[in-house]
Image (cartoon, rainbow, N blue to C red; front, side):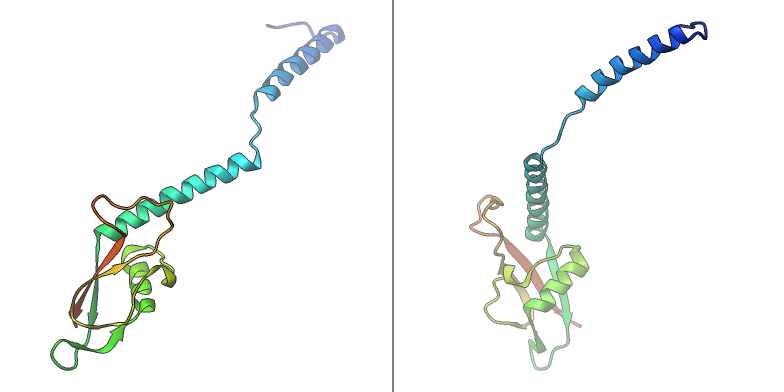
Length: 138
């Protein structure tokens, strides 16, 4: 509504603004540090689950030179698998999460068990998460 430009009305309008601004400020919800931490942990868990499903459902293909028969010139180590997973799948894996007893030294398909946090539920019908790796000749 339009009001005349008089000091009396200007004071009333200022007081009304103060009243309405207070109500709007009270509506704002305060986010505590605990709520923020819980939300971040939940988001991380979802990211881990999607990454684990992606690792379990894909096949990581490595190409290597061979020397005699099906033997590789240089065996495939954990670090090479981690770097290839980061390059091909855009997923960063810590080398400690791969359970590779000895380097892979021959051509073929391998399933490498993954050590993931217990918070991530295991896939149906499987005892553990695995990463499928196929080594082909170059």
